[in-house]
Length: 67
Image (cartoon, rainbow, N blue to C red; front, side, top):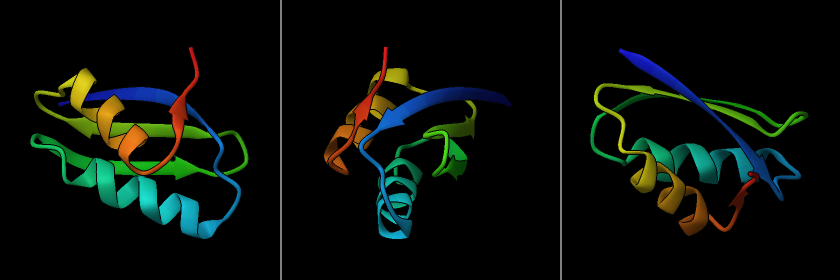
């Protein structure tokens, strides 16, 4: 299983975290989503991970991946 870390901008509260977790959690192959609100760090685990689908899910939740 692999873990990919994303830095997500725009999250300001617990609801933001829930939105990102819910959207990313629905991506096929994703087995875990850990979000740190303070740093904006989102660790996504799964096998295989579809990077484009994870990024699209973050965008669908209303946030942006930095970098």
